[in-house]
Length: 212
Image (cartoon, rainbow, N blue to C red; front, side):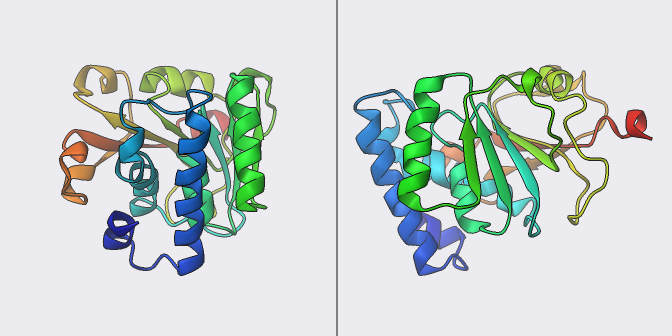
C-alpha cells in the first residue's frame, strides 16, 4: 500500500488493512469471475484503489452523506471510498447479479456497515442521493439523463450535490453537451503515467431548476 500512503498519509492503519484485504479479495475472486480487467489486476492498487480514492481530492464526504455508486462492477469506486469515509452511506448497484453477489461477500468480509449492494437498474430506484459516482459507465450526457430525479436538492457538503464521474481521454466532444461542470485533472495530483489522461468530472446538481 505504499502508493496509497504516499498520497493519503492521513489514512489510518485499520483503513490500510481493509484496503489491502480488498485488493486480496478482488484478486482471489477475479480468478473465478471477471470483476476487473485481468490485464491490469496486478496494478490494482494504482489503477483501481488509488483511482477510486482520487474522488476524495475533490470532496471529503460529510457524515450521513448518501452516495450511489452507479455500475459498481467489482465495488469501484464505492468500496475504497466507503473504507475511508465510514460515516457516509454508500449504495452500490450493478445490473450484473453475479458481480453484486461477490461484492456483497467482499463487503461482509471487510465488515463495512456503511455499504449495501444490489443488482438493480437505476430506473427502478426511487431513492434520492446526495452524490452519484461512477467510473466510465457511460457518456456524461447519458449519465445526466438516466440520473434525473435521483439527486437531493438540499446539500450538506462543501460542494453542491451532484454527479461525479471518473473519466479518461479526450472529453471535449462529450462535454459539449453538458452545460455546467468542473474538471479535476488527476495528473496534477498523481504523477504516475496511468493518470496522464485521467480526470474527475464534477457536475453540480443539473436538475436543481426542476426541483425548485
